Picture 1 (cartoon, each protein chain N blue to C red):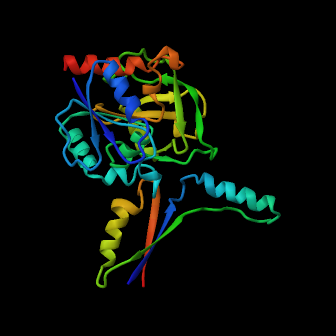
Picture 2: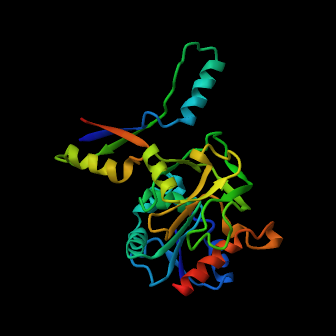
Picture 3: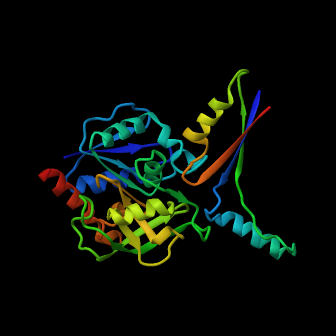
Length: 76
Length: 221
């Protein structure tokens, strides 16, 4: 089984990299890009039976820094 | 007085830190990250560098290494710890210090000597300075943009735990915070490198007072 973890900066935390991407899109002539937030996707190959709770524990302990980041878990 | 300097793959200020501590009179042991137990020491120093290539987040992997469990135990037992640059990032990742260090707001690596204001002298690390004194210490980082939420910021202010602030906006850090203390004031994390400011031939000696005052306080403690 696989898990896909999305890690994003929390709302309200300024994302300087996202801002730089927004400016670059503007410079390329794409009008109307009002905001860009950049995060990361982490794909995990897991032994069958691994629970969502375990993946969340991985997020809390290592994959995300919950001081500044939020995460979502998708199992498939 | 005994000090341990932690060493991770990718640490690059470990030797500078050891030299700074030795010159100030500490008996220094360098400890490899795989060692689960620390020798009995008065101070643990977490040096600068790029531990584990800054993979995932700066300091995140190092914070999970066996030696960091020893560091956490040392601090919980009331021991002193100093984290500089990547060491500060490791201390926030272990949650021994509040907040997090984010990518510099200007997105550039900043490598130059900056002015710092000493915000409190109420700690073993800062008692050798005077409150409001401006010292010149080098910074060299890409992720030094200190962030914490409003509640944490208020607590840091109320408890006089902001050790140093930049005299200018260096990296976008909240309130220009350059270094913070733990609640028991025995853990200091800071982005600037005091260990690079201990020799006039290397550009300045404003970092000396930090190491000397630590030694003085530890001897008298």
